[in-house]
Length: 298
Image (tube, rainbow, N blue to C red; front, side, top):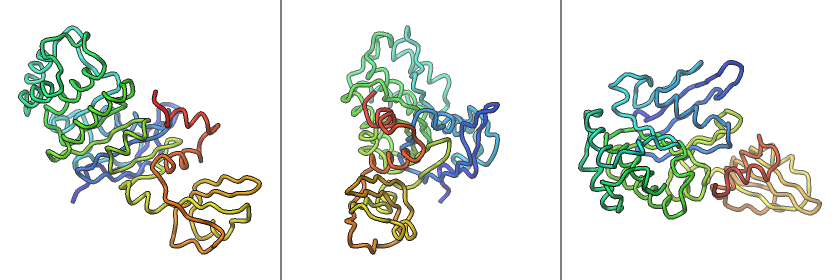
């Protein structure tokens, strides 16, 4: 099976700034991939490269088996929704549906209407008077109406309240279940991603730290808790991601290569937030700043 997304050594520089470096990513078809990382890690740059809105300065990238470009044949299969939710505030939802029909060959206006009516979003009301959650649902419904095979979402739920976020993500999961759609969803809100996504791309310091199915990645990692002692033997046999040491206790996050031999350390399963923060902590400043960035509602 051809992956929906495949990159090798993908890089992007803006003058003297490296926005993305040597990114190697594989996303199978039909996945909802969580794109996670601190501000400035390269998430938006990656999405723009995948959508054909920017050109790489190094490496290779294929989306749906094609090199991203502004070619209409490529763009017909791509849905891109930016954080700003690009809608015309003076137009109604019905106006947007009519415009979409003129711009997209595979447009499904009936699909938009059914989704919006089911969500209680009024078709005749100006977009500028809708709530933030209603605007987000309208933007998602319009994006899905072009029947894309790839959906790229850049922080679409960042400004929504918890109920609006849940409704948005529920509609997204329903769309994936109903057809051949692959999604890359950028967000700081790990709890929401954990409920919706089955694949993870973790960026930090402009590089890919993790890429793979979430269940597989969680199964490969363990937290070890034990006494304050030398851990050289453990670090020799396993990949150490993060170590927290106090006068009495040592806590290690490891990527394991088999069982841990040392009986002084008790292994425990890892959650998605713990995994993400562990890798981000390798490249972070103060720990509290990173917790605020990725672990809290904004």
